[in-house]
Image (spheres, rainbow, N blue to C red):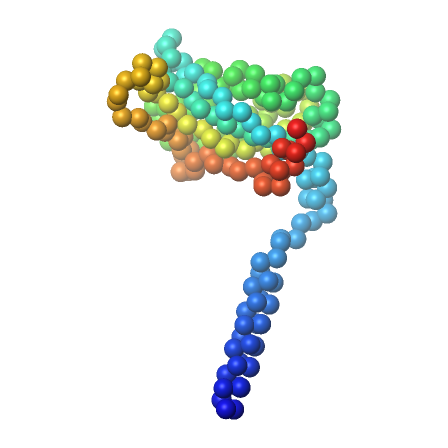
Length: 189
C-alpha cells in the first residue's frame, strides 16, 4: 500500500514538474519596448498576385507569378496620394519587366535577400520616403510560355506546376504574414 501511495506521489511530482518546465519554455518571447513600438507603428499590407512577363530577345519567354506583401509605416501610408497596393503593383511592373533580377538560364545567381532589399529600396524611392520597412515574398514562381498556351488552348497535356524560384542559397520564397496582422488587416477593411 505504501508503494502505491509513493508511486502516486512520484507521478504527480513528475507531471507537475514537466508541466511547469514546458510552460516556462513555451511562453512567448520577450519583446523589447523599442521592438513593440516599431511593430505598433507598422501595418502589414497583403499583396496581390501579379503576373510579370519575362521578355528576352524581343519575345515573351514566360511569366513570373509573384505575391509580395509589405510591412509599412502607418504614418507613411497615411501620406500617400494613391492606395499602397496599386502603387506597389505599378512599381513591381516597372522593376521586373525586362529586369535581370531573376535569370532563368542561371537561377543559381538569384539572391532572395538582395531581391527583397532591391524591391524595398525601389518602392521607397518611388514613394519618396521610407514607407516600406520590410518585403515579404510569399510566392515567386515561373510559368513557361508553353504552359500558358496549353491552358489557353485547353489542350489535354499534363499540367506542369509553376516552378518555384530558388535562390543561390537554396531558399524558396515562402514568407508568411504574421497571423495577428492578417486578422487585424482583414477586420479593418
